Image (cartoon, rainbow, N blue to C red):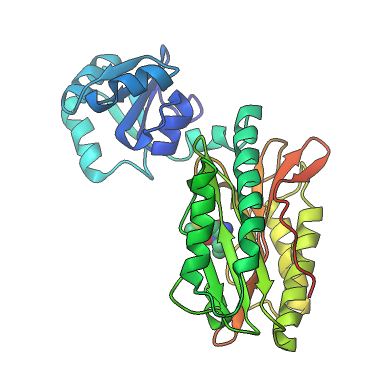
Length: 338
Ligand SMILES: CSCC[C@H](N)C(=O)N1CCC[C@H]1C(=O)O
């Protein structure tokens, strides 16, 4: 906050509200951070929950009382707000109620969230372990004649039965649909010779897992197998290079270079990966040109892909913890060798 030139910070990003307070319904809360500490604001629907969960003092109020209470604490101060999250209406409300200079900030709390605490790593580890078990259970049903939607449903049911939440809409992209990196499950019936991309994750105590496996049904064409093996080579090389001090842009370049050697540069249509935590996508970003540097305690995905419109696609993704001396791969589901 000092570096950003603010005396206080009004936090409205739900994941940041949760990270700073422990309150799990961050979408219905705000946190005010001042030199005197942090305060959680939420409303009477959450009185008991906030008392149970919040590690900071709570004020139960609804706007405009929320703003009126906070007004006393920010009188005459320079107050940062989260430019990427506060709505225009939210900013107008602060202007109306506060005698304070309002300063746009970016990524202050997100910066603190880049390196996970041991408790956060444990939650991510548990989420991934559940996902691995569920994938093992569901793997046999990925065969010709089964709808993508039914595979997704089985994965979701498995996660819920295990006590986890479904982290994001399950991607099941078979055959030509595999060319869509975000091809959420459809009514398409899986066919013999398809590659099927499955990308899903669990959420435990608010923390996500993220893993992709591409599986073969019957014997895919030689072209698809060639693409699969190229993506696997890129993925394994990039995972092997994960260590403290590694520049994320260089990891992206490593994977991209391997795919380029296989004539698949254009087909790799997204970045190599991203951090995972309270949000499924958070920092650091493993993208082209990124200067982010890995540190122990970061949890990132490594997920190169190749997408060929009209033909199909492949993505292979592992969830990786950066350790003091290298990395630990948290996702354990086996990868196919084609
Ligand atoms: C909607 S969450 C998607 C999770 C997935 N593992 C993922 O992060 N990606 C799939 C395609 C690339 C990458 C992304 O940037 O969204």
